Every structure is written in C-alpha cells, then in structure tokens.
Image 1 (cartoon, one colour):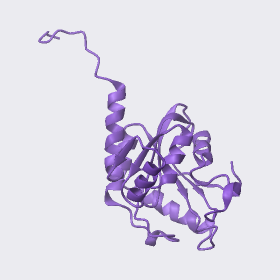
Image 2 (cartoon, helix red, strand yellow):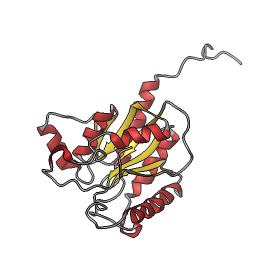
Image 3 (cartoon, one colour):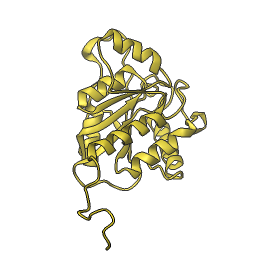
Length: 221
C-alpha cells in the first residue's frame, strides 16, 4: 500500500476471488464537481447515479470509488473530514440499494509540472486499483473504470480494465485531450447511467445467447 493512501470500505466484505469491479471516479462522475467539498452537505449526487450503481451491483459487479482528493494535501480539509464525508456518501447510496464496496483515495497534492517525483497513489498511477483488488479480492481483467478525466482513462488502461469516459464533469475536455494523445476509451457515454447501461449490455453479449433447452418447440413437458 502506498504510504498515505486511504480507504473506507462499506457494505459486505468481499472474500471470493475472480469478482470483477466497476471502478468509479467520484467528482464529475457520481456527483457534480464542485471543487473540494469538505462536508457531505457540499456534495450533490447526480440523481441517476444511484440507479447506475444499483444496476451494476445487481449484475454481480462490485462498485468501488477511486478518487484523487488533493484537498487534503492542499490543507482544505483533513483525512478525518474526508472519512466522515465518505461514510455519509456510502450510507446515502446504501439507502438507495446501491451499496459501494469501498472508497480508495489519494490525499496528496501533486502540483502540475512537479515531474515524476509525485506520490505513488494518485491516478493515473494504478496503485489504488491494485490495492482495491488485493483487499476486496477483485479480478482486474474484465473490470471497468468509469470517469470523466483523462487520468481516469489512463488509470483504467494501466490496470488492464475497460476504460469508459463520461461526458459529465470534465468529460468533453478530457475526450479532446485523449484524442490529441491518440487514445480512445472503449466507450464514451453521456453520463454514468449510460455508462452502466453500456457495461450491462456488454456483459450480456459476453455471456452469449441462452443455451437451447434441448426440447423441441411445442413439445409437452
């Protein structure tokens, strides 16, 4: 675990292996990006985010939030404040039948132009995803990363997960940046609800058509 990286796990413990995740960015993906919210009262969740997470859980995928929270390193709020916010965040989603299995965050401030000497845990580096996989028993291959920032897509690629870009938050600017780099997410979705719909459709396609029952049409049971 990278020093200083944090986690708050919510919901039932996951102990099985080969369980795939949907890694979710927080600000700009599940909720409006308002800067550096220090309290739950400052967080405005997109109304459709609850159904998105609920549908992913129902399909057997594990929702996990992966978020850079440099507000801690900048001195805007402390880790206890962030932990309290994530407890209320998790409770709000759980109350809608959309439990989130973990909140993994980087608390460091890495100034632009700071070179490669920054922390080891901030997205797009994969450390938080690797830690989540180790702690929750997740299979990274076939997992998904959904976010609105270039760093989210690069993080997903670094993990070997399927990258999905949403157009909320910084999504449109991120798409232009990715195109300049010659990169393309597996899916570009209007929002996290549309991203969940695409993931579920992809999962159904991967499972293939239902097997024939072996009974002829019209045969009596």
